[in-house]
Amino acid sequence: MQCQVSFMGAMMTKRGFLGACLLAMSVSAALISAAAAGEKRFAVVSLYNQTPDVTVHFSYRWGNENWRDFANFKPGQAQWFSIPLDANGRAPEFEIKINEAIGAAQSIGRTFKLEWHGATDKGIKFGHKHAIRREANNRDYVTVENIGPADVP
Image (cartoon, rainbow, N blue to C red; front, side, top):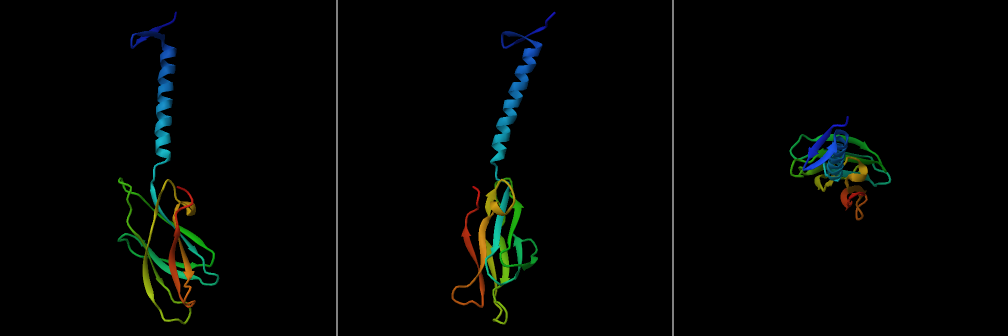
């Protein structure tokens, strides 16, 4: 004996009704998943040491957090920094403090505000790109430059 269920005026078996419910739930889950897949969750900054011969030491922070030291940022090295976005897709500013002088040059401390990129994930390819480079006019100093958007949208 087969049991039938009336749903919105149509008759169907319990098995058919259960199948329709499972299909509807699967479609809903797929739509929610697709929407969440593109959701920006992190503010990401990517920093590259593009000097050929300078190991850099700097401090960094997000917003008003305490400064954190980053030592031995070697030539050719890349590093990313991230923080979760708030419910409105915002994040505090990202800053680095650096002594721009190389070797015996007169010490010049400077703070840079670096642009971040809102991203779905964390990692070097997700960050807005910045580079530490030797200054073009005075090779005794380094500077921090904005070199472009993230590798992924």
